[in-house]
Length: 175
Image 1 (cartoon, rainbow, N blue to C red):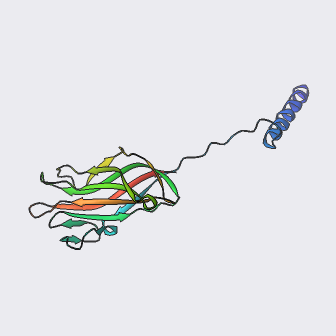
Image 2 (image 1 turned 90 degrees about the vertical axis):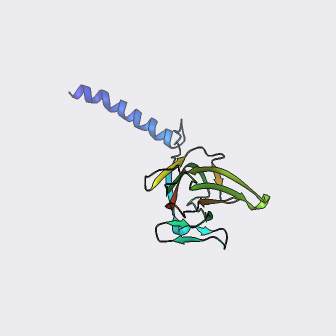
């Protein structure tokens, strides 16, 4: 037993010294891969403001509805400067074939006086309440808030003859 211990002690010491030299920069340092964080932000209906003072709409703490077609917008803020948009999910209800509730995500660039649509999702006539309409067809995906202002634009069809409700939008992103 003592013979085996005498054989392993030098081997363990050599492994320990080799590992310490590698960490101290004396040898092949091991690179650490950056971790990808995936997160989501929920923007409720109450955060959206009308794009015109002439829209006839109703807003509660949980949803928006409109008497005639109306558009609403909300800015997006992220906890880091640069994100990659992965998915946009719209939560709404519409049981009419006459129109859909739609969300579009924009990326405005004030320094170039331009705006770009990144992606959109729309409801389909359904009795599911709320309906989740999701898109991953987003291009370009990267948003840098140092030079671009991301926002959401929601269109609600008029609901004079049917029930249409907009509940909110979830944006899933990574950084």
